[in-house]
Image (tube, rainbow, N blue to C red; front, side, top):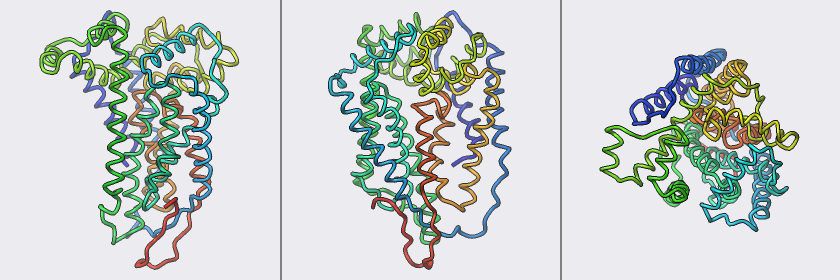
Length: 439
């Protein structure tokens, strides 16, 4: 795990380079110096916050091994996962979840309903699943990091299945993307834990999940990538394929894909594949663009989480739907509604410049996790590592508590951490050290 400040600077340097190199062109709009200044202020506040946490003292030798009793954590997460599956099965029983074009239309209708101030029509089962499915993220991370031999069926049943059900129920891609990236980051944290447990006996291959599990994970990733491509293709077909989507991008989104590099891609791989290159990279860099627009032009009220936190938006909509409609209409007038605002644009709309303080707190909490992992006194802190890294890397989308129901995800993460109990090992170094988990 890299220091959060260094990771944040690297990530946003890459985003800026991608936007500068790839042939994106704004139509009838331009980025402003004011927008870049405010962006640097927010990133600087995050980095300054990380510096408030003192560096961990270097420990001599190898940290003593410990067992982590995750029995209570696993019970809570497994129950939440089972509830999620049942709730979404009830919610999906009358829906055509495999019709991607229909799912896109339903999402568009939901976005229009928000702008019209209409009340939510989600079922009670969906609302329950919405609060419990993020436990699947935490279950997957905990199992991958701490179990010496993760039980594949339990990982699938309580980790991945709730997320798959949420993906089908909500019709988006964020939950699936989130669990895949978190799982890959958890593998890195697993190496740290195994090194501490095994000491001099540690070998990198001991952290590997084995050929069957590796093939299974690769199959899941391949299936997810196929799903992402299928969703983009289904949406393109609605407007006439790739040519239609490029036209929509220019006329509605205000973003064109032109120039020598674009022409070379059209010639080399054709319109359909060039559209996929365009859309995948646009998802990454649009946060930089939309945040700049918000910093430059947004003059509405502080939305206090309605814009950037799913759970807050859902609660306020049930209390005062027209208020949410007015908030989002202001963003629609700016041409930023429906796009990814990045963490900084989200904080700016919700809190104005008070968001700088939140950025600093976020940086401090990320550094707190980083320094506690370096101290190697309590391995439970490794549970946080994938989520902290994910929050920084995906800051181009939203804050950690705003992306993919992140507020509820972090609740379950804290539950898993607090319910676990570190037990200092009393065995000799030569004896095998057990770690708890469903093995």
